[in-house]
Image 1 (cartoon, helix red, strand yellow):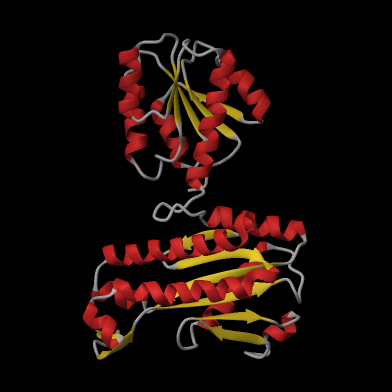
Image 2: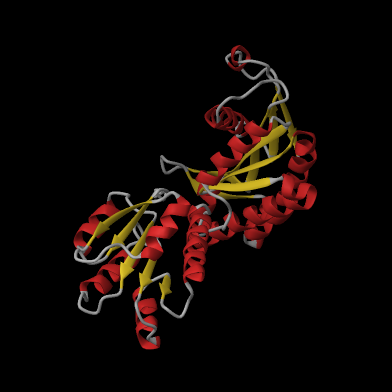
Length: 329
């Protein structure tokens, strides 16, 4: 659930105005404040996708606010919304109590107003980073991938978008376990990250779409060397994820969708590469669609391989495999 960026929810008292701390902070950040003294209404708004931040007034007379925080933090769908408690006194036991309930930050008079506003800003920054990454690999997710595409398009420099996908991964999961499958995903994420960072540093980007699908973006001139290195490292390391028997054989027997036994090769890696060397992109969706097409074509080829789109126009795209350059590890 992407965080709505411009709305803050405040759970306070109907007979008291919004505290100056919140009012002054939102004036400098551009957020709008929606106020309610009803925890039920606050929860309903969050479930509808409202609220990039929830600020709760710590009023001992309203014990239902603590239960609201516990419910929100106990539900993975709403737990991503950060919760800040605003207290008029500093009581160590009360602070600890709120943290146990799931609060992300507690602001008390112990902190000067400037520090309180800074803490709110830091909390929002941390939340944005956490929402933007994939939980299993800690790599940037789809939101950050789209932003990276936009940054590359705006920069107008040569780039290559590479879509990496595992072959025979489902059969591996079926033979071994989801635990082993998750380990393979993590190994692949480290290979991509370490090779890209090692070869082009901050000029490279690696993101995790989900499952066994990854994106990496590198300078145009570096994509061939990087893809070649990734495939070589992958082919060296991934066989170690199999049993010795399967590794020596180079395959195992699995069942297809009709229940028939067939040979399943060891996993390989397919990479589809799209560049702006021969065409101009105006929207991230164009890059994504073409990268997906190239990845799908790469998966029709044997072994670990990367293919580069070298066509010049949308007309060429309809012409079939011509204009694609395929290379293995």
